[in-house]
Image (tube, rainbow, N blue to C red; front, side):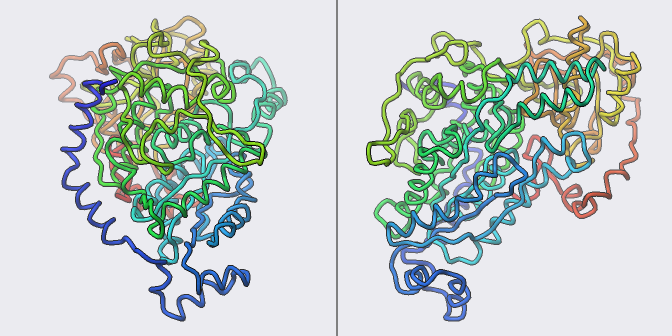
Length: 605
């Protein structure tokens, strides 16, 4: 199948836009390449410090051997369910390396915070910036320059993007990402959502809400809805950074451990010491990022990845623009319905065909680049196969069924849930925003209503409780951008907004902040740029202004006389409460130097 014209056009546009920065990046990658174990260049004192803590056999192999030394960058902590399984990974990886005469060392641990814990809490104001800290922390570990390849252990929201940024910064090293997999299914996600709405209406008490939450988030592994964490995992498949089919294999299973071992060995096999040297910088090209954007649209993935992909790409010398996302959305059909875009969870998505099926459909219809480098070899077709174990317990791959096993969850390109992708770009006199449309019913794609302006999501909840929002309205929550307070997610508003919509009122959200990757049925224009703290038009809105959000036309406008609008002064906001407490004072340099959301909200690139 020949490549779709729009996919070709956008790819060429990105390559031309990125020509200078990508060329400079690849020159640095080539300069950093080593043809022998890099530790041979260390002084005797350097190497003595590097091996002092190793077991005897490993110490000898590192000093005398010609095999590689594998860096382990781990985001393990046992507060994040998705990262709890990583506790035992280092020893599994060390043993896998020993089996091929190599060694492995934990080079660094990186912070990993859980947005589920910090939603609606002050700590959420550190969440987006933690991505930069993760990239920097991983780089500190790899800067010891003792390593021939690296494996990254991470899953969740900011962790994978931060690790990809670190991998790009050490682009001469082969890098394999080793996931942990989703927890087994708990109560259905749609049931959990309805219970949250009941609590927001005051119909149930906190004890019943907690019982439902704990029945949903119940064990080690990734949360089972298709939010940012699982979108990350799907995109690692699409970008060729996983072992094929690794994303959604449950923790604690023989296949999960076998994939981990094989991934560690593969990272060493593609180092500069072997015959198949594949530095991660060569994988992270324009085609890989176009594939990622298409994959994001095809599965109705998290809006957070619009920000993250821009930052990840920039780290590899690739410059993405929101226009790229918008144009690719026009030609990418929506093939998956996974909560919050449907009732299925990721375990059901995986069983119905999952990543392998979606990638196969995209390739067969010319919507993804097949001729790309991956950690497993040349060609994205390798990721249309499903991993399994042979009689000896080794990983092998089999052809998928080639068809959806449940068309309520995943469909072919010939019969999609929607002919367009899951995300839409909105532009107008209020600026540029992103909207996730895959979970929003078509009758809610256009909302024209008076605005009600807030500077804090808790004030929205209180207004709802006071019966002040029982009408058609567009809720504006501003001074929530990266410069203002770190761009926290406003996921806590989801039950409140859903209740307003369920009462039959027209409702939408407009904000310069973020929504969760699990944001659902209420139309939300998010990531609005310029943000209020950076001269954005959203700062000029007043209660009662009529605003029109039109996802069908891709527009977001205030309906006001131009001369009146030009004379209106922007509002101010006291942000002092976001400057201290829970470490927020340490992040002032991030707030002062962060790029706009549509450029990745980053300071690292």
